[in-house]
Amino acid sequence: MDTLFVNAGIGLFKKFEEISFDDFDKLISINYKGVFFSIQKLLPLMDKGSNIIINTSWTHFRGLPTSSLYASSKAAISYLVKVLAIELAPYHIRVNAISPGYTSTNQFNETLVGQQRYEKMIHHVPASRFAQPEEIANAVFFLASDKASYINGQEIVVDGGLTAVHVE
Image (cartoon, rainbow, N blue to C red; front, top):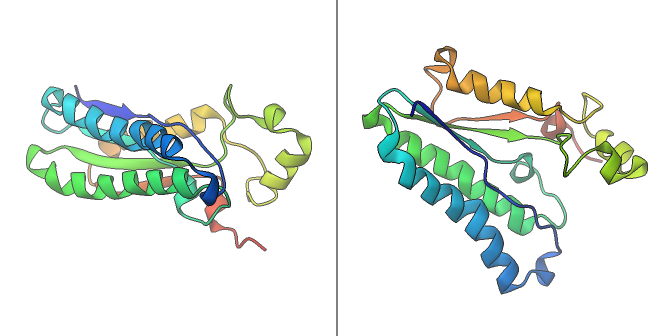
């Protein structure tokens, strides 16, 4: 295997004091343990010179109400990228991440969030829209390519400028 793209994750957005042990265990099991052990189990199949790309999230770059559990699970993955880049270097395996911003998918899109919420959300996105899945995939393809051969232990934020904006 020359590229592993790990895209495991669920969202849970609750106030900090409302998060239960079950909520915590479920989200951490999928968002962190799922990623961690998927990589560990598939590592023996990785070729020399291959790469691992992990999907994280923009949410751990900025404080966002109701995202304490979700964002901290993605921050853990972000740190894992840096550690694995070092630990897997002897195998010539690069490890990087992408952090998508708002992306139009079947589960989350402009229609499902509603017009009023959508307008409020894109107010903070300099690109003034949600990303298309292909735009996120392009970042993954780049990291998987030889053009990114010297990129290791990094996280590319693909968010239309969302994390660059000062929220008022």
